[in-house]
Length: 482
Image 1 (cartoon, rainbow, N blue to C red):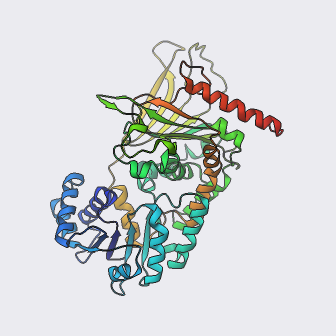
Image 2 (tube, helix red, strand yellow; image 1 turned 180 degrees about the horizontal axis):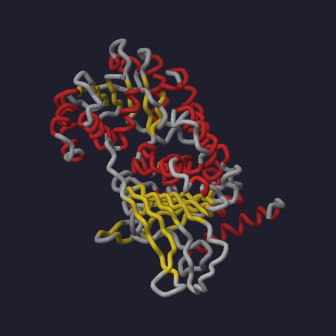
Image 3 (cartoon, rainbow, N blue to C red; image 1 turned 120 degrees about the horizontal axis):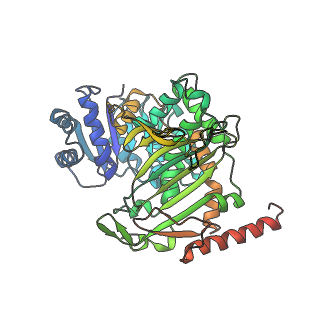
């Protein structure tokens, strides 16, 4: 187990909000010994004492429920060095020695290629590992280039492309529910499941993140990584083991089976929108384009929805809908597995019968099964709901990921070919959106999102959507695709 963590970009929001509390949780659970060392590096003029005060402040805000002794242990283990992390000499001085280190790039993804090149020139001790946050590249070509640079630095087994969704308790419970229950696995296919929704809707608006978000948008920020990763766990074939090779091989199989969307498909099966001024609960929210730091000319979306199909034996005929939006009326963060209707109802029931839905709550975590049962009156059906609460995880998601990095277990990290396949899936969407084949709609902050696509509403947004659709349909007809 590696005993030294070097965080590049150590004074950023990611480090303070997630990594420092995760280290305190590891200390509290007894996973880190007294010899563990934390080295922080950034361009800020700080001393080690100043860095320790910074960590203390963040732990008071984000880790106040953790034992005081564990928080003190993180602070005592910390040292700071001012460094230009793209400069090989600064990086060489930062690594300092032959002991293997785990390097966490808590940096803007645009810096990854430069930092990886500097690390290669500086040279890493044998056995070192490198950790990168999503997104892994900005498109398919840049992902391939980044993977090539990483391959020159360390073996693939030592590259941890982390996605904290994979360490969330409920996401892990998708595997447990599927693979450990005979009652579910025989039904886990297109014969019985009509649709799977993977949703991360939040009432949170931009909240000062324009510097990052306005250059990325909902599709790259959430769908391309987090939601596709959840799709892989929902749809993959049962692996032989949950070891890194078997698990990641099966995830890649899912991504390879995704049917690529044509331009015609993108118009029909994707949506993009951004929030306008509105009210969420008791607060007024300005239009996204009026948020500080936003460049309206970029056309960044705050809502993205994509419908995908898998061309494989298990899932042919099932729709997978991935959706994420900001500034919405309420949080909805779940995987909803919608089963097909029964072939016949002998009850004489005249009302609408809802299909069974198995819901994995991502945040808050939980498990719910929507069923139909008989009511008090004979022959009358009523809706039933079975719920289960999950035991709290021993470690937060980032704690689990850091422990895997230090121990050298990449099972929950994303392999290089997997990162490329995820970009391949969404490249047609990105290309069509850049060409404005799908209109950028608007929805009021505090609403449920953009209006239904095929409804002629009072505003111009849905009409514009239909005009765009008719234009592409006409093009498709000319090409013989209609």
